[in-house]
Image 1: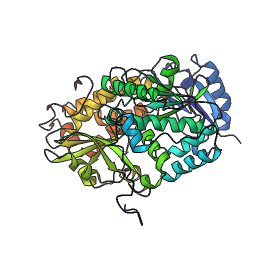
Image 2 (image 1 turned 30 degrees about the vertical axis):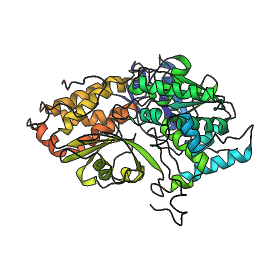
Image 3 (image 1 turned 90 degrees about the horizontal axis):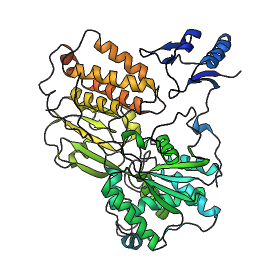
Image 4 (image 1 turned 180 degrees about the horizontal axis):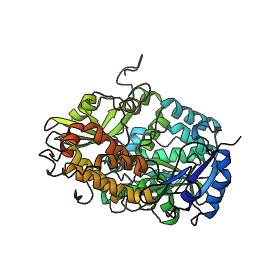
Length: 79
Length: 429
């Protein structure tokens, strides 16, 4: 099972706020209207809504991705 | 820490960055030519990587990431990259990198040459902020000497990005070299190496490279003979504030904070130390014996950050000084990310009101919420540094927070700042 998470590109985001309307279970807004994502993996039943939020974001700032690997856990080749 | 059985002191090489020759002739007399392998020599590469790993060297630009791991990742990239020397030093309280460029430019450039050879790079770009005349002149002179002597193996060039706090953030620096736009880039996976065009960018702090230059020549032994076994070597620290002698000192990692401050001779009783720069943390009186190194500082909730210690005397107001820093950092946001662009000015306003004793009923709760919400929500770690600084101020200056929030600020909040800023910073609010 993939551990999916919502990522906001904070440079692209312009605080339209659609994502928080579509997915209030996971996304809140700060006092300036920028999204705050609740920590942790995305519950399975919310994946479809999250995909809609990603599609509807006017700035394409919201993406759903599998959890990023840590730098130190990456295999490293020498020489 | 003392090295175990050692050769006679006169024969023993001592690792140090300050006091090295500034000109190429002196540099050659002291250290000889670059001992880089010609062509691709696996044994040379292996032995340098092994020395870096044994040395325990960590990045000296604030991240304290193990240099050997960063180099190994760069090596695995396979493509000829570009070594970027980060001498941007946007931190106003730091002057170690520019000192290094004027006093030992050849060590810094040599470090870049070793890395370039190790990682198959064909270009070294040294980044010094535009307008820092002395540092720029020193680098240009050193590069000219090296060309005249056909000393360097890989082409060296200088780049002059704008002199801003954020310009030295590594993605902002790579971005500037690629597109002349000095702003951080959002990278969801920081484990993927930075790129300039299609080429990997190997961005290393100037001091880190100077250490590499010595480790590459003399092995890890002299480096490890200094500092602590967990965090070996020396480091450069810029000391300022309530001291007679401000400036850069080279200390063993793990030197107690107070011993470093004493080298500058405090001019008055010191109530707190700002460690790690303006995105660093305040350390209160009870922790002045803490060793200056990442792990011990982390255990007291502080961060080593960049090599900066500012002594705050008892006649200064910690809240007012923190409010100025918050205001400065808010002004240094690149403005790309909403939480940083709007959040940092709001936090600076809250702190300025608190410092001035104009604390409305909900201020402390609001400030606490804002600190929690802004943290970690930028493309770079600029807002996180500001949040850490303000949080540490609230926890170290607790008595002041209580008095100021009652509307009875200390008598010193209007005193002129003891901090250095590149432009006047008013409290406002």
